[in-house]
Image (cartoon, rainbow, N blue to C red; front, side, top):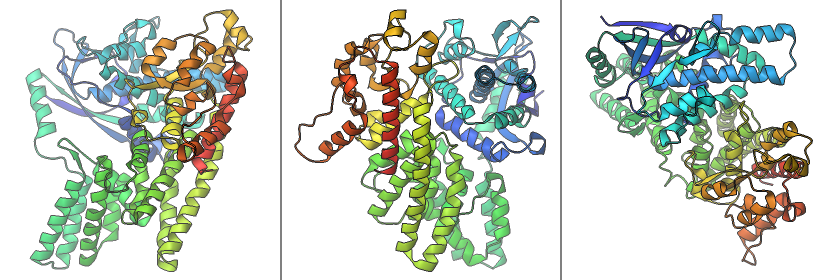
Length: 614
């Protein structure tokens, strides 16, 4: 018998089941994009984690399909949904680590500690099974030994498992783990408390259990292959057709509607198996054209209340078709034809991964090459200033709608040029505000996760400065961990002796660790070069830095000198030297506490200059 029920994540994990991921499952393919989008959905569903869980309807994450293991009754074999289950399991682990880290870092009152311990309770059931003495027995999710990414999952769950594997699919697991940490780090204590209750009790899965493998595969085929899922667009299409019918449309008008709707849908196809989520496009489309910020679950109501007449229906569909054409091309990374400098679009959509920047671009899709390039540049600087100031990226989604409403009003009242210049001025003001915060954050923060390893944001920060500020080197846009450019600790992450700690200006190992993951101790370097540098002291690394093609690294060794007498490169070198060169670094034997602080300050000031176009 096949059973199916909606269960909270708490009920999915709060049991003694082991979820087996069998050998016929595909690779783990979720990464930064999927996790970031998931958190955006959580943000929207909870009004940025401000609403009490009891007031929320809940969020349906999708299906998982299971069968019972006849040989081991406590085990469930996962036929569909392993990406979701593995990610949710990692989320529980990261939640536990984040709470422990905050308890350790802050001197909290007894009541506060008790509150944290209450919400922390049973999070470990999301990733493991434990005996009566709370000793770890085994992982909650167990991947078949042929699935290489399973070893990385086990290593994250139990760092002492010695099972880490660095295959390509393993890097996806690591990326998801890192992004989960970064997303939770953005939440203050109050929001984190609400998030824990929300994720346990308000995020739901449809759990379907089949009696046999053959029945499970039959069900899986039905769920995935037979017909097309009904999407918000289909409901809106039917509603618009009804409005056409009320006004007695002609056959030509019906055919025109149908043709434009089909083309509009085709524009959102990314690949034979993927397309832009219709609710995401509709949300961005409405913000970009009207300034209306409509929640995804309210889109149908919005169009229903709009109740457009026949002429308006045809106009809406025509505009959707036109906007989706460019929107789809940008989502597919088909940048040629939008602006000549496609490198800017690579920085915006690949390096910064700012999908919500589409809302800024939409009003200007049909503008001149110059204006489109200016808007893309503004979107990059706004997005980067938000990211590196540790402001939640939904700041863009919160701010842009009102700016576009103002732009549309100015367009009617004062004309295109005046409206455009006011829009640019408003964006520049916000960039300046956030750039100042980014400068403060970059100087003062440690770029590390709760395990003391560097986090992705430090790596992305240096890549951004180099790729946007200096060059069009596409290697710097590669986000996966099997990359040609990697992050190097200038002062070794692990000191080889107490003498090195003292020579570097630190009192002890604890103080040394406090500075290891500061931005002033990071440099970008070729992957092969990084492994060869290992734990060498600074004067032994200087020659490698001097030969680097990455200017923020090269300037560690000496001033940058161009072979040209004048031109763009000469100007860039002068700028980098003025902001980043330090006389002490060209002669120092050790990379010291003082040098880390000074380089941190210089990089922070340089970032502000890059963001504000100084």
